[in-house]
Image (cartoon, rainbow, N blue to C red):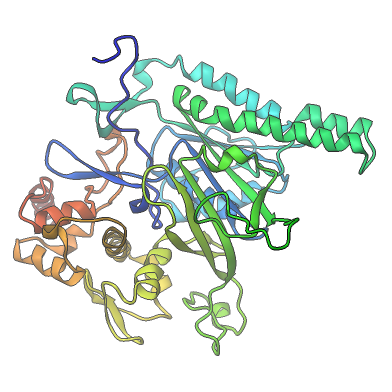
Length: 477
């Protein structure tokens, strides 16, 4: 060892799979002892999404958190609402998209899984200090609270961790500190010179908070997330070029009420550029992917496309552009987002047929139409898995440099698996995300796109497949 007195960093720092196109850009596959692959990607310990008002920042980040609560038993969410407008009813509408969470009750009397606190009840700095104290308490949790993750650790053993508690500041822009707020309200008139200095102190206080988040998250088995507002940058010199703080940030726009350190101290930093109705065409203003009768009306505004760029990514490529599909009534729609990516943004990648009638090349027997795809994605988990695997493959080929033996089209991959004796009806009855190994017993088998590529290349035989075939044969007998 080069430095005996210094601890050695772990082999990996697991992230939480989110889907919705966010995993591959910041992901890395690890091979398990049985030869299968697990994807370390998704939500890190510090995450921020910024954008203009009414651009669905909260809806997107809230759906990410609920995905984690659904998949990783033992995790929890502390939600600090600085804008004092969030209601538990939003959680109860969103939970319908999750099998386990749909059975939960979300209100002020049931706070074991999600607890909402409004800023009028507790100022932002007091709330942050409370999370610091909690982090110190959680640092002392015993080993029997830890769960096993399918990632390599010291001496070939799997990494273990206490399931994380997520802290969500919505928004950090409007988060206020008690000492500063008291000074402004009690001692200064609006516009008074001394109040301007007070607001500088507010920025310093937030800087201290943001700088501590990564450390607290790591030692306290926690994670921090924030939303933030943006506004136009005021340029004093008319002809002086103004470079964005980050390479892929939108020029002329800057975060408001956020310390500058926020841009550099996050695992993931997403910037929303705009949000607008997702209509079929310039002449047909109905929803591109209708579900209800109202979606077929002219000038419908329920289905929105949120153009987003990941401008900071500590675990992968920066600059990847997302088009998140959000329903104002149902929230973020992950499977429709993935379908829109391969169909519209990647030019029918893995999608056969024509504009009116088409199919997924990994699920060719299901006829699809623009007007039916949204409902079918809600009703058919295998279709969702086919879309997810197709989107993962499309992202890998767009963002990564894969070895030649893994370069394959979805149609070729489909036939290759059949030639090797696999049944796609079984292959699509799977999940691609990892979870704690103690909680896998009653879940579908895990199968990532890298597993399929390895089978295609002749490097792997899926270890769970024969057992699953026998289970189905026994159930049918």
